[in-house]
Image (cartoon, rainbow, N blue to C red):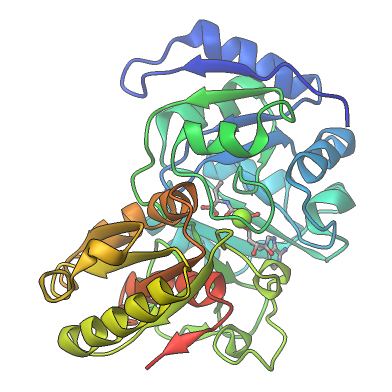
Length: 352
Ligand code: TXA
Ligand code: MG
């Protein structure tokens, strides 16, 4: 692939410089790729109605072509041209959660490129809650197809520096709007089944969805690795740093004891090991044998953990660790998304 001169623009989300947005939108209309911040993670956008632009996303990321992309809109009205029919529950969900971290899977309109849907009859759409993203989509005048702006399989980017580390020279530009808020991706909700079904847990929790819809299911393929998940993206090893990740489960004192024993063994075997622990566990561990150690926050504040997780996994790689021991969290609320990403990044290696 020819190396591109990736353009870099800083944009203040509270005072957007439209000169920059117009240049970025021009690249999109020309079929180029532009990375941009959202409230979840950075996306790598291209004109979602231009097959050539969309193919450039797959090339830059090294993403398998059978993994469909989300279309990003700047106005709920924009979905009418993109879907064949609007499922009954869509209206209330859009009213309640858009703009925000909820992707709705709906029947695709005939004109949506196969590159976006990966040949499925459905399309995922969301309206991001970020001023820079919304300004770019509006100015481009087209829906933006955008996966997370990381090299395929690696943790998603929560800062422009992560995007550049993975994709510099492979994409047209990056809009740097600072660190993203949520830190984990949107919830993917399938509205084409009789009962709405979560295909990927994310920023909007099952509890929040149930409060609005009554009944919401979770794709059984998410928790049972013998079953094939319905969302193609969930079947790949994903969100994984280069080092081997292990998830430690249990009460703080027992997690601490396990971490300590593994640290000592790895030191003897000269395996550089990193630690990502809760504040509850942190004081019980002697960190001197770790190449990198971070206190991620309290079990009582999972939002803080979600916000930091991808950045800290990348930092563990940078520190040269070969093994990362990450403490697990309770699967409630946003914890469901945290544990989903942790288990995937660990390839389901759990130490109980
Ligand atoms: O927060 C987010 O959702 C971020 C930001 C940039 O918007 N985007 C993101 O995109 O995470 P990506 O491509 O990394 O993940 C999209 C997920 C994948 O698991 C994909 O398989 C699934 O959504 N997906 C997309 N379209 C689908 C469809 N029609 N049916 C089932 N799953 C779909
Ligand atoms: Mg992704």
